[in-house]
Figure 1 (cartoon, rainbow over the protein chains, first blue to last red):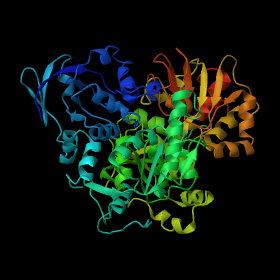
Figure 2 (cartoon, each protein chain N blue to C red; figure 1 turned 120 degrees about the vertical axis):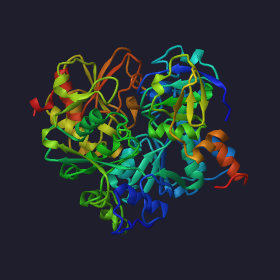
Figure 3 (cartoon, chains in turn red, yellow; figure 1 turned 60 degrees about the horizontal axis):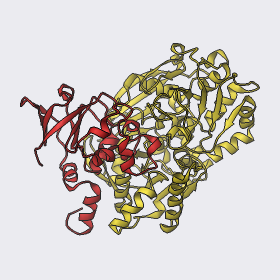
Figure 4 (cartoon, chains in turn red, brown; figure 1 turned 135 degrees about the vertical axis):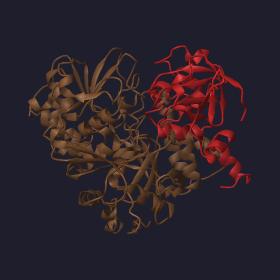
Amino acid sequence: MTTLKSCVWKLGADIDTDALAPGAYMKHGIDVIAQHCLEAVRSDFANKVRPGDVLVAGPNFGIGSSREQAAGVLVYLGIKAVVAPSFSGLFFRNAFNLGLLLLTCAKAEQIKEAEVVTILPNAIERADGELLPCQPIPDFLMNMVQAGGLMNVLKLRSQGKLNA
Amino acid sequence: MNLTPSTDATMPQTLAQKLIARAAGKKHVAVGDLVTCKVDLAMFHDSSGPRRLKPMLDELGAKIWDPSKVVLVMDHYVPAQDADAKRIVQIARDTAKEWKLPNVIDSEGICHVVLPERGHLHPGMMCVGGDSHSPTGGAFATYMFGIGATEMLGVVVTGEIWVQVPKTLRMLWSGRLHQGVCAKDMMLHMIGRFGMNGGQYQAVEFAGDAVMALGMQERMTLSNMSAELGAQVGLIAADDVTSAYLQSVGVKQKDLQYAIDWYGDQDAESEDFHFDASNLSPQVAAPHSPANTKPVVDFTNIPFDVAYIGACTGAKLEDLRAAAHVLRGQKIAKGIRLMVAPASARDQAQAEREGVMQILRDAGAQVLANSCGACAGYGATFEDNATIISSTARNFKGRMGPASVQVYLASPWTVAASALRGRISDVRELL
């Protein structure tokens, strides 16, 4: 895993899948949905976010629908990781299936807007060097992130390059 | 399909553990175990299904592992409102033919309602659905949960899914509900108490005499809104009510042989919460979260523009009957609209036979198609600044229309009573 520094976008609690991927745009492709990502809570987000940025949110990130476009838009926009004290379980599965790293961090809310942090495998290093521990992630999910998602894992398996 | 639960007197298991153990081919499983389960049924719809799965399946050069275990339901983009919706539905229809899917339910109702209505769910099964309200299947003692499209691709290619064996949170309801108070109120109350992630992606199990006194559709409402509790599944043990329902929809006796054996062992470990149904009043959730629930008295006299009875959560036959009970022989208040989107064609047909639909029309209801409609927010939605009282499951900002739309969630009883008065009302005053 690379340890490039990332700029933080700070969000509140209970960010739901309609905020991430609004229903009205669900008939479109991921490029169109991404333009409307989080517009109900941060209207400048889709325009100003940069690849490699991270989202830091309050508890219950990703609650709501099973629509994986809610994770897909964040991958499309180049978000490196989402850090929150807790996630919706359904969103958690979807994110890893699409290769998006989620870090469950009890102290996530201490991180500040626009702070520059470093994402480590099981921790976040803050701008002042403080380490915030994150819950460990099972190996098979970490491998999924590194492969770029379940689709790539299935491809590798069908090519015999990966054991089932 | 062998749907016999394994029993081991030395290792008491919750219903969730028994269901996972069977699907994983084990005698028992422990909380926290990561296991691979064989999938007995995979359901997806026009939005989450073919339009997402087909390109990925083609790219892999793979085939559906077992088309007989797949059910495709067209319910999100029907009836098609525009060219994009038409295209999405056409992809579903074309793909169904190409994949030779034997089970396709097209424009006849919402997936979570038509699935049991067509006899697809049998106690003991491991099922996944390409929709977050898939825990509805838990009402039939199936381990059914929602997954995204890419994970569904994994299922249809391999026939398997991973599960981390959850803890069980038991919601034990005793006592008797008052007339006009129903499963929807029970769920809103629990979501208000525990919050939208209170289920921690564990197994919720609904039990107690107040739960077992409910009919299957009311039980489905409990399991359905386990999604809003943030649980992976919302299970209810199978009993004679379950068996009778399944027989009535044509499930063969041989498939129901072990149905009522699907329950959790009494001494299995669970975290228990107790509720008294006889003390429950009608509940309302304020915008923009189901967790903003309080008793209806905190909201009475709030005016609104539209009363909406729809969705898998709130427009099944039992919901339509509840609304008709309140509206019989009366007209809705001037200046508001009442919209009713029955959850399935069969439920609507039965409601027609019983005179329920006529009561609703006579009261002034506009009857809409048997689909997800405004609840999903994918097609027709509400206009700017509209205030809605709705029997649906979610009132997130921007879900049912522009961010300015305010949605209050309530039971079909409460929505109907409110439609009569033109303001949010306590249905008990009208019964």
